[in-house]
Image (tube, rainbow, N blue to C red):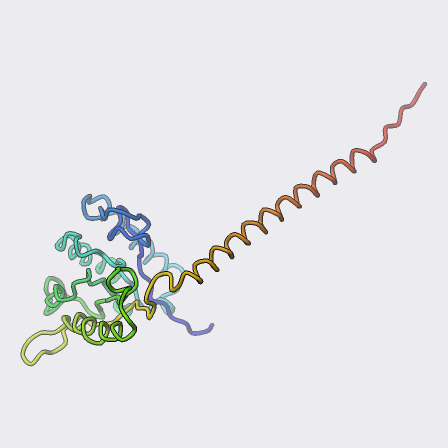
Length: 238
């Protein structure tokens, strides 16, 4: 109706692909240590793709991410094998019109050859996704605004440009390129004042919810007492 289009991605996988909280499990990344995790993830991709097709959403869903931010310590070859299988599932269910994008494992250079010239499979309408954040690591959080600008314009730009090129002079490969996530924030919590404001808001919400529930319970109890006190019993004597 509103001509909106969506690029989906699978954000969490069994065992966790990165150990981040947004993977559904904070701690160790163990997705690649058990093929049952990988197979369950492929099943989820297939289920989602078929659901999109069955619900006639192919015009709205124009892109599909195979897995969000797999960590650089995940087994590289197992990750690529997963990408190949998941790509085939998407193409089988949704056709060639849906863009397929993959995470760069925080090492884009390692994907320069991937899906290029049919290696290891023929792939079209595909992209490598990079994410830029400077708000999670202590040395980045300590940077001045000018240092943050330098970080993005030099280091991050160079990091992104490590892929996807081939030949001399370099020419783009079949794997397109985009930055799917980024932020201008310097820290997850921009200031102690804002953190206190969030805490106060949360406490206020809890207090109001508790007060509302208590008032509802009290009202219900009073209603029952009133009903009991106004009930009369009629006795007929013969």
